[in-house]
Length: 317
Picture 1 (cartoon, rainbow, N blue to C red):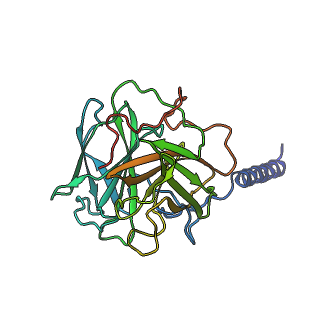
Picture 2: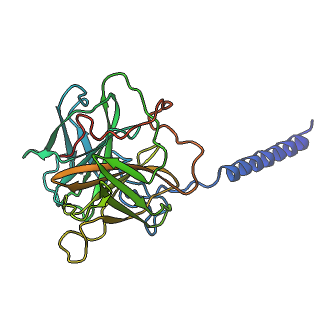
Picture 3: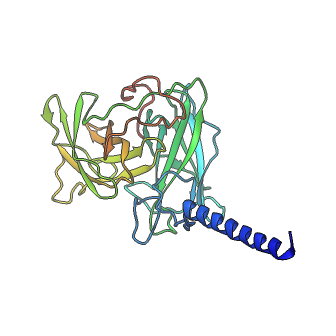
């Protein structure tokens, strides 16, 4: 083969390689820049991608740092942690949110064993709370707080183990009614992803509407929603507040919830009556009902999960 022919063949080969590479690039699509994270909102103007709360252990330089190796299943043990700031030092200055500097939410990865706790903070910034969980497994611990140096709150999450034989439970089927300690709570309304949805909880006892709910952390109810699969976190507070002259003390408590996607969510409604805080639990599906709910525990669920209220160790702090 003479020199001219070899050069022509080489040039045609380069064209073919370039065309194939261009085609692969089109199949893969352009590389999009990663949008800044916002842990409290499902969507934000001007943000291509927003991360729901609780999926990150750190954000904007703040980090939740456990000091305890795990959770106790045999009796109350001290769970200790710190919130580290952008300078790496423990944060000691917070802006109070709903009567507390920090709310600690604890739930097992299969969405059982929910707790809403309020730890104490030492002068050096170490938080601690006595807690025992009912069953072994991997637990997600959410720290919901607002550093004084920030103009908004953060929700950071970290996995903490409870040693022992872990037997995951199936997510309970969607239901609009839950019972706890003789109270019946019914939810009205639907969840639509990407927009604000109104949910109204109605509380009754022995068939009679409860009209004297008591304030709990500055409200007549607190709602936490966790997405099945990854435990994306939404902390929602109700319309109005006690003593505002327009908000009734029951039987209805209304919430506006914005979920980030279709799928199954586990909802935990805290309310106070008769001097005691109780939690009603629900499974609600946003959008079309999924064919199956993925196990957030990483293995198939084995049995239905009853409400864990009334079992030893369940409580609020």
